[in-house]
Amino acid sequence: MTTPGRGQSRAGNGRFVREVDTAERDAEACRLRSSGYTYAQIAAQIGYTDASNARRAVQRALAEVVQEPAQELIQLELDRLDALARQAHAVLDREHLVASAGRLVLGPDGLPLRDDMPVLAAVDRLLRIQERRARLLGLDAPVKAAARVTHATADIDAAVAELAQLIDEMDSTERTALIQKQTKGLP
View (spheres, rainbow, N blue to C red):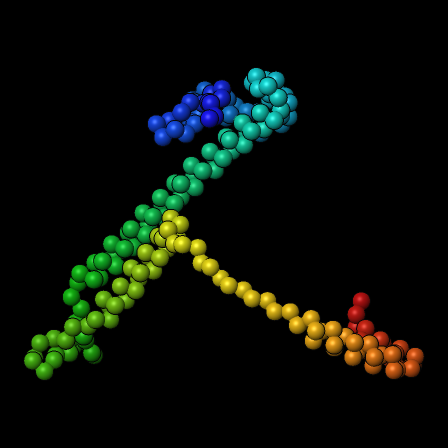
C-alpha cells in the first residue's frame, strides 16, 4: 500500500491529491525554469531534495497549465454544438410546405403539401452534431482495422534468380549498356 508523500493527501476516492502549498511550489518552480534557472538551482531555491524533484514539479505545473485551457476549449466546442443542435431542432419543430414558383402546392384534398426535405436535412445535421460531440468526448469505441500483408518471397526470389541469370548471360558490353540505361537521369 502506498502512503502519501510530502504535499499529498488522499481524496475521498482514495487517490492522492496535491495540496495547495505543493501546487504553489510547482508553479514557482515553473516560473524559475522559465526565467532560465537550472533544475539544480530550482531545487536549491525552493527546497527540493534534488534536481529530478524540481524537474517533476515543473512538469506537473506545465501539465496543469495545458489541461485547464484544453478543458475550457472542449466546453466551448460543446456549447457551440448545443447552439447548432437547438437551431436544427427549431427546423424540426416548424411546419414546412411545398412551394413552386412562389405559390403553395396543393394536394388532391386541396390542402398544402408538407415538405419533408427540411426535416430530413435537420435530422442529418443533428446526427453530424452528435457524431462530432461523441468524437470530442471520446465516446466512440476505437475503430479496429485489419491489415493483412502477404509476402510472396518465393515469387520474388524466382524473379531475382531469373534476372541474375539474364545478366550473367550478357556480355560486358550489354551489361554496361543496361547499367547506363537504368542509371540515366539519376544523380
